[in-house]
Length: 249
View (tube, rainbow, N blue to C red):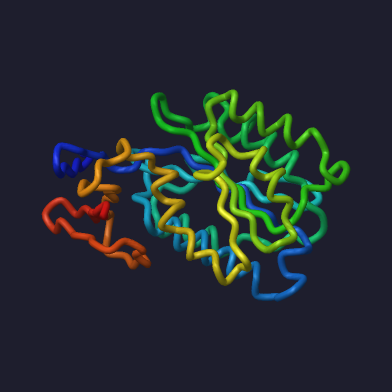
């Protein structure tokens, strides 16, 4: 049964979303640091740990892309956090080019296709993580933008994390769902990935309307204890309903 936390007349239910990780596994990932692929996977593990994984809450699929794109697993493959985390840690590093074009095509036509595990009335979202410019079949192909548009037209919210200054930020801002300033997250390097979690999780689990001064900004329901770097001046933890309450100041 979903927990509902209510403060000052505002409420939010537990996160319900069908989510795809669309992950760049091209040669540039480990080019500067051979540890970057492991840092990528640990970031995905840490993000996953903030969700309540299961058929009644958050379902997660994963698409990898390099020369080609592949759906590594679909939405219904892993039904609990432990098995999903173990699968993330086993993700192979593929090397070579950056085929975001086909990755977005598969996200729409395979991951979120009817009969593949999507649930009626549940938000569909995809998090793209990349450190370069898509180049299959050609550098900056229009096919990527076309596939992104088709995803958005099908109701899939696209978010993107651009790692390093090697990405084409204007292009990624075209790819993500509007508004780009809440769906595009630039980071300097792979070590900085965890710095965006506070912004990313509420964007995945869309919660409440914009607050008035002095009222609650975000409510995050806690499946279990976890650590979050808080950039807010005030917060409270409702132990009874297991809600993290970040206060607008």
